[in-house]
Length: 353
Image (cartoon, rainbow, N blue to C red):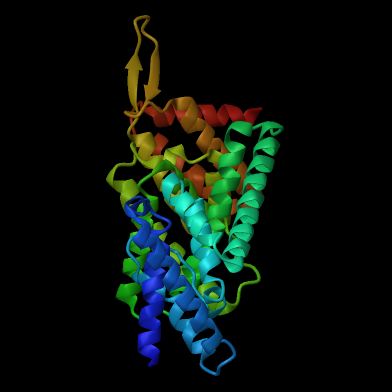
């Protein structure tokens, strides 16, 4: 069998494994389930043919790029070693998918229980799922003792997801030579994340991932991915800064990202300026003036964001502090009575304390 046919067949399993993690699994019938298991068994046979051969690294290189071609967009990582546990990987993916129908779960368990190897796979998957559930419970208990428990669990989950995502993105794109293919894959992943608030949390957390210890080649790919994502984030924020999911990201995450990434800092500062420009005065029945954005952000919230950035800049870089103050000052001096004058006054009072 030629190498191209082997890779084509492995890609068929990759597509099955990818669909097993999406809601399309709700349409699987008994035959679909059997076919998926057959493909997994076939890949395990290929593992024994490929492992230890001189062309193993070439196969690994090809497998690492397969995620780029999958639809729906995926960060699936395949290697020769993962082929050796293809059935376990498939079963774990299905059992972890909340969209996998209960009747199909029972059918899958029934099939696995018919052989000693199937029982072993089932026990292994059940242990992994139990360990994962235990970790979630541990994180939840930790969050209940944290002062900021409302956002603690969400933050650590997004941070972990960002680390895994970036690691898989780098692995998938490391050997991609065509610029258009690289950009298309980044675009698909970004669009998927940008659909939800949780996705935006993960996007921002990507800029907090430490690159220390990475080989130069991987660090360069990571830098290219983040540069691509930041460009898309900037464009989206400019289109409608007021309604952007950016403001739903926990402020601690935004501060951490801007303190680590200079480019993210500049993007976030521009977004804060655009948000401030959207504020307008609101006069109540007693004649008191307050300032709000169309999305309901208050002067107090805007002031807090600038205050936190200033506090962070002291420990990161004095030039950033100067940049923030110059930005606020220029808007105070260049406008009539607007929210910027109130913001400048509030920040000045904070410095006097």
